[in-house]
Amino acid sequence: MTDLRRSLRSVPVPDEEGAAERGWRVVRAAFAEREPVSWPRRHARPLLAVAIVLAVVAAAVTPPGRAVVGSLRDAIGREKVVGVRRAEPALFRLPTSGQLIVDARVGPWIVQPDGSKRLLHGWTAASWSPTAKYVVATRGHEVAALTPHGDVRWSLARRGRVTGASWSFEGFRVAYLNGTQLRLVIGNGQGDHMLVPRVRPVPPAWRPVGPRHVLAYVDPIGGVHVIDADTGRELGSFRDGKPEELRWSADGTMIVARSRGLLSVFRPDGTGIAVISRRTLGAPPSIPAAAFSPSGHTLAFASYDARANRSSVSMVPLANGHVRRLYTGPGHFTGLTWSPDGKWLLVAWPDANQLLFLRTRGPQKARAVSDIRRQFGGGFPDLGGWCCAAQ
Amino acid sequence: MAGSHRQERAWVRGARAGSATDLEALFREHWPRAYRAAYLVVHDAAAAEDIAQEAFLAALRALDRFDRRRPFGPWLHRIVVNRAIDWARARSLRGEVFAEGLLELAAPAVEAPVSRGPYADATLAALAGLSPEHRAVIVLRYLLEYTPGEIAELLELPRGTVNSRLRRGLDQLGGRLEEGDR
Image (cartoon, rainbow over all chains, first blue to last red; front, side, top):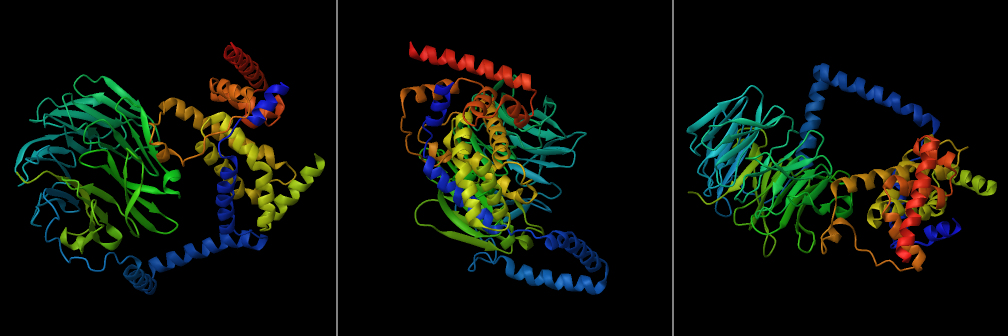
C-alpha cells in the first residue's frame, strides 16, 4: 500500500504548474468580481428586490410610470446596438448566387439574388428541396410541398403541431416533427408514417448524400441517433449536452450537434471527433448557431459572451482546428447560413436590426443590410436556408 | 494537523472578508491534490483542470455559507471526485475518441508528461482499466488518505459498498500490475 500511495503521488500529471496558474487566474478573477457580503447587505438585498418589484408593478399599472418606462426603453434602445454604420438601407441584392429563405412573422420569404422577394403567405416556416424546385412548408397542423411561387403540390394535416420539415438528399423523403413524434412521408406526399414515437423538438437532419436515406434526430433526453429511415435500423448514437440543432457536413461524414454552450462533432457511427466549448472559446459562451460549409469540413459558429454582451462569428477547419474569428459585434447573433458557393456567411443580428454578409475567403469584408424588421413585415426573421442557383 | 486546520480556518475567514492573499493560500494548499485526484479519475488533463477549477469556483460561491468549524479539504474533494466520476461516466457512455490533429479543439495543447518511474507509469495505466467508481475510491483512500467511513460520507454510499469497491479495485489493480510485469 505504501507503494501505491507513493506511486499515486508521483504519477506524472501533465503541466501541473501551468494548470495551477491558469486555475488561480480563473479563481482570482471570480474572487475579484465577488464582494464580501456583510450582515446589513445580506438583509438589504431581499428588501431591495421587494422595492424593485413594487416599482416595476407601479410602473406597469400607472400611466405616468408607463410613460417613464417607455421613454427609458426608447433611450436605451437607441444606444444599445448600432450595428454596421454604413449598412445598405434595404436588401438590394445577395452577394452571390442562390435563393434565400427567410422565415418572418408574416410567413417565409423567398429572396432572389437580385433582392426581389416573394412571401409564401399563410405558412410559418419553410426549407428547400435539394435543387430548390420546391419548398416544404409548415403551419399549425399542416405540412405541404409548394413551388417557390406558392402553388401547393400536396399537403398533409396531422393532429399534433407540425414543425421542422426537411427534404432528403434527392427529394424522395420528407421528415417532420408532429408533436413528440418523428414522421416520414414520401416526397410525393404519400405513405406518411411514424418513424419514432418520442423525440426532442429539434428538427431532424438528413444526411446530404446517398444512397441510403439516413436521418439524425434527438431523443427526449438529448441523445442523438442516426438511423436508416427506410428500415428504422440505428447506425449510431451519440450523447453530449442537450442538442438544439443538428447539421451534417456536405459529404455526410460528420454531424455537429449544437447545444447551448457546446458544439460536438461526431461521425454517423457515434464516434466523437471534436468538441468546441468553453475550453476553446476561453469564456462560458452560448452558441446560438453553427453550420458546416457547403464543401469540406469547415465549421462556422456564432458565440455570445454574456459578460461583455458581445457576439462573434468564427470559422474552424476541422482538419487543423485553428479557430479564425471573422467578426465581432455587440448584442446577439441568432442565426447563420452559408452561401451555396461557400464564399459568404449570412448572419442574423436582431439587436442591430441588420443582416450581415461576411466574406469567408480572402480579405475580410462585411456587408450589412439594415431595417430588416420593416422589410420582412415586422419581427426579426429567422434564416431558413440559402440554396442552389435559381432553376 | 490541528495547527494546519487552525491556519486553514484563518484563510477561510480572511477570504470571506475579502483577502485575496488568504484565498491564494487556500488555493495553493489544495489545488495540487484536487487537480491530481481529478486527473487520476478522468485520465484527461484538460477535463481534470476544468473539474478542479469548477470545484474551486463552486467553493468560492459558497464561501459565505461554509461552516468554518469543518475542514475545507473534504468539502472540496467531495465536489472534485463526484464531478470527476460524472465526467468519466459520460465519456465512457459516448465513447469519445479525438482524432489526432484535432486535440486542440478539445483541449489546450499540453506538454508531454514526463515519466517519473516505471511503477508510477504502470499504476496510471492499470488505474485506467478500472471503472470511474473504483478509481474514485482508490484515489480517495490512497492519495487523499480518507478512511472508508469518510469516503462513504463523501460519496454518500454505504460503508460496505466503499469497502467492497476498495477490495475489488485493489484486486484488479494488482492483477493488472502483475500482467504488466510479465
